[in-house]
Image 1 (cartoon, rainbow, N blue to C red):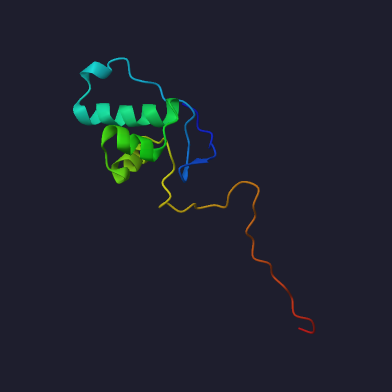
Image 2: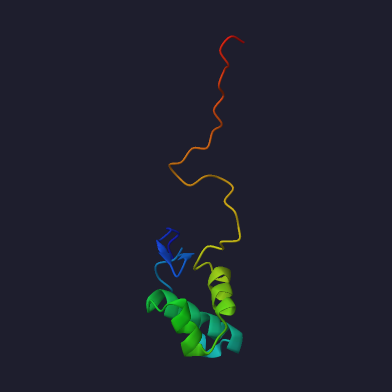
Amino acid sequence: MSQSISPDRDGLQVREEEFTLPQDSINLDRKTKRAVTICNLFINHHYGISDIVRLLDEDRRNVIQVLVQKGIVNDRRVRQTRPPDGMEHRKAVFARAGT
């Protein structure tokens, strides 16, 4: 899995370009199988969130939560601690004339 940041999809910043299915997926528990299916549909088959919700009869919030937990998309609730690359946010210090 790569760590590059891709353009937004469905309003989410995608972190992964490929999702590798586990070889032993038949032995996974129901919850993990569901998460693998969501990630596979979103990344490998380019399904949108609403398509996954409809196809799996799943809650939109749960689909997004799985994608965040698995590191597929960035969590928008977490604020960046530093500015994006190429942007500088220094406070300018101006000297007043005559001081």
